[in-house]
Figure 1 (cartoon, one colour):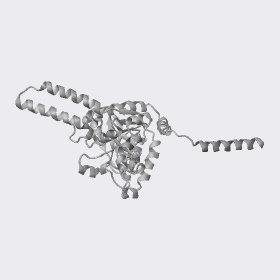
Figure 2 (cartoon, helix red, strand yellow):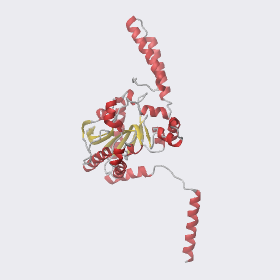
Figure 3 (cartoon, rainbow, N blue to C red):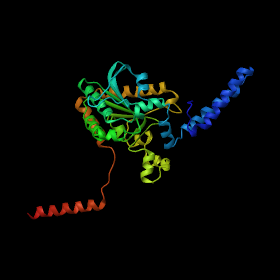
Figure 4 (cartoon, one colour):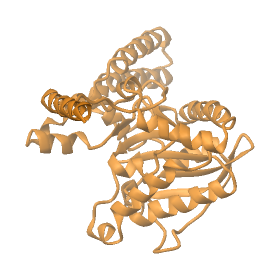
Amino acid sequence: MSEFALDFEQPVIELEKKILSLKVSAEHSKIDFSSEIADLEEKKEKLKKRIYGSLTSWQKIAIARHPDRPYTLDYIKYICENFVELHGDRVFGDDPALVCGLATIDTKPVVVIGHQKGKTIQENLDRNFAMAHPEGYRKALRLMKFAEKFNKPIITFIGTAGAYPGIAAEERGQAEAIARNLREMSNLKVPVISIVIGEGGSGGALGIGVANRVLMLENAYYSVISPEGCAAILFRDATKAKEAAEALKITAKDLLKFKVIDEIIPEPIGGAHIDPVETAMNVKRAISKHLSALLQMSKKELSQDRYNKFRVMGVYEENLKEKAIKNKSAEKNTRKIRRK
């Protein structure tokens, strides 16, 4: 169990403390507590399955934001070989919030792009808490164009609360950089697979998320706005974030139902931070499966597949009054044509 514990994990923490205490006592007193320890271990596993099997949207968001959760460089370490990081957007500078580079996955050459948070306060400051500046998105696009030129698949790892909203980022064209990525990614002639590994916030996430296949870890979330931001706008009260989280329908289960994502990647009980290696292997299997299918498509089919995926998202219903006006207008035009 991580040193950092969430409030709903406290019952599990208490049982782990009791188990540890019994093990220490057994070691010092030479008394056999194996039966008691086994009972507590069984009780703990049942409790974990009950707690993590019925998480609310807000609790899943808390796990997605867990400070020990693996980030892009962790997944690169576990599933990629021969990774070489590339820097700079050839316009302004480098952005450590977005990691970009070349690698291989099971001997297949790929371009890897992903948001990167830090493990310490200083690292988070250096990485700007994975909130990318315009140069980050321009760097990502530079690597995407490289991938297209040399026919390499693109793998992106999404894990950000959003693009950086500061004055400097706006001065350097934050909105334009993200919009350009959306346009250019939609027409790429190589396979693109995106995995939401934690937080997937707004345009900051979508700026590297226009993919043929969008996958999502079990306890991640993907949303146009954070629950806190939504609550502040709609309810005028940021403390109602829990209610907003439920209403937004931003968990993996909800988004699979709405066909926003294509697959949910399972995590160990308790979250990806409990066993990063197991999580990474699950991610690698999902990437390999979808990549094998996408590599069978032609360049034209790949861009059309991506267009179709995003074009069919969502539903709409015309206003009945407006629909009646349109129908009435169409009837008038038809009668005029008949008279002529």
